[in-house]
Length: 244
Image (tube, rainbow, N blue to C red; front, side, top):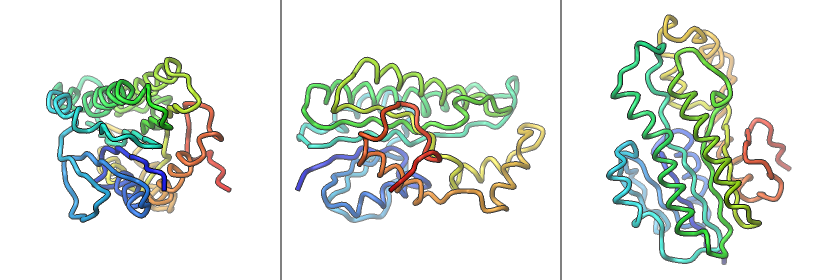
């Protein structure tokens, strides 16, 4: 049996939890899962690391423990952790919250991607870096300045990484998961219309059953990882996937 490694951030809830559950059922995968909260899961294939990824000094010290010296046939880094941030117009944002959001949504994934490339670039393994993006990376949304900006910057970072590491066994993706029924959507619906003019549209997504389940998106992401030959472009959107 081939050996694979999945390194995932933000695994304790939402989409990250669904992806974790998917891969826990695959005995060929070893999983390193990073989140502030550890889950009560007893599995020999799972190593959980409790860490606030917005604390960059802590993350930097932990990098040697995250990237294993063991060789694997396939290695995946999935930067999933993220925060919608303060839903407020520019001029009403708190500096501390802005800093935390940039650290978590952008600099944390940049640190991890940089360390991943440094550790595994010269190996013969199949390597995948997938940074969870958003439609907001390419669309200005009132009240979401930090979220739009960090996701746009992370997409460009991923594009540059792909251009610098052209190889048949190295794949980079900036992946928009669509509108997923997670806690983040609850935060959005709980905001004020004065801060977020599109709030009624997002409430309607929930009321009309237009939100996609995290498990459905997790299965599409797993399909991407299993069929990289079908996905040549860095910028991807699961809503456009045709799974056979």
